Length: 518
Image (cartoon, rainbow, N blue to C red; front, top):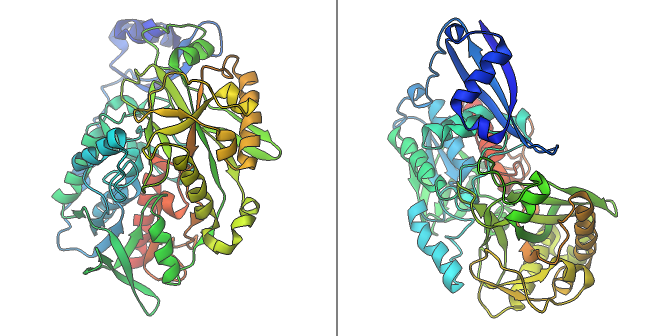
């Protein structure tokens, strides 16, 4: 007989398999001899009360052991000689589209302007230590996309978009810990994700797909309204039965190329703000009521949101036990992001804290047409850079000074390796952004007692939460209406917001390509 049991345990109890099993037997009302097999299907933390508890959902079988699940690789067949589909971008949308295409009997050929995960490391080191930004290889561009070296959080609320379990299972089959299959907020870590991403590539290549790095797509070949192929590095032409456009939210040149080719793109709302960085011990004390926290508890996190003047102010991409990293994609700009290693053991916690930017906010930039949002982003990013010394040293303020419109005399410690300098973020940010952020962090301090503190850094600027441009597609066939066989996909097209949602969109688009080719 199959049965699902839910139990609550202290963190130390949940870490002890013998204790878990005994609690499970007691709750199920059975003897050890009756339990043939059991498995945890969900694990979460309940910190709402004075005693923090771990919640476990467990499936038991009193008849037999659970049958082993078939692996993804067992379902694949070689596609070396099958129809070819071109994919622009080797991020989660591109790679999971490729894996889905192989499963469907099609051959993916992937092109990425950046480098493979190992080669990217040198360019990331150059940004961190010397402030040198390679516009083709950085925290946003390269194998695995922005998520590879900026955390690897696998949480999404987009459950209706696709099969999340399949994506998590694929990660596990390529080297991720099986905990991500049960954790309420699964996380891999930027120290482990690169190897997993390279394993995904090896699977794609093993079954006949191709992956090309240092392959900057510089033109699309459109004939009589149909996408036929693409040009790489200004000279090399490639042709396929369809093209999946999965370039991520920061490939600005792609939007200009689409506009030049008279393929419609649309302005859309986005968000902008700062990275807020606290001591992790403070967040643990607020959330768990304890500092230092129990050794069996993970670094605590938060998610905050409020309305200020009918606009949303919210935390985004919260990184407990994490680091703030430079995410610029071109020289002369400051962009920051957050990441965590698998252990989440940094003494700092950070999150993007942003304000929604609506199309009406872009009226001063309307001369740029559909690119108004991009120009808005550029203006702020370049203003942040100009406040510093010409490196990736980022402008910052103590949170309390930010609200008081006061330049900080000094700054708290930070995880940001290029360093911080005190600057007037209240002047560097657009007034509408500053006004709402300043009221927002005060409101957050009322929701989380201790959040609003002079010991927190506000670091500029968090400007790449999503793209300010959407590449529209038909809802039925997921194809662009101006170019047959062109399939916009993922974050860069405006249809995803993180690793999991981008991967699901890649799978959905791959299935749409299959239907189109049939």
